[in-house]
Image (cartoon, rainbow, N blue to C red):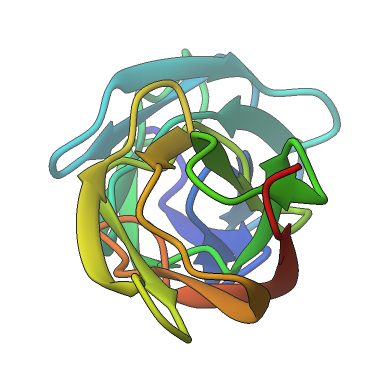
Length: 196
């Protein structure tokens, strides 16, 4: 008669940041003597199904690219000739990645009437990874400025203006976040000189 087993599933890190790989470990404990062999199948809600092979009663698998949210995971030990199958459960929590936003302008300084291009680059903060989507709000102070919403493409948003008056203009680029990435902002200044 096969020996009963208990399967324990652990998740590391938990919570994980979006873009960060998660390691699932299953430990199969026999209710008797000996060491279970065979495989454990990890079934992840909203994620892949992955199989690991036991070594010393333990197996680990790495799962990348899980979406933000809670993912139930079942570790199904499939049994062998001497040990009965069993199942363990856990929950993987994936949270939004923090971001940084850097903003620059070109040319700087510019002259009155000259077109100035503002560029915002939004990047995840490690261990987060991926490409943020959504919009950036450029807030340009001073004469001829205003608030302008521009879409992100490959993590970059741009804005071109030729309406800025002479003087120094504070610049704020506010990334508005998306389902996977948190908002962030960056600042800069733009100087506009009188035309020759």
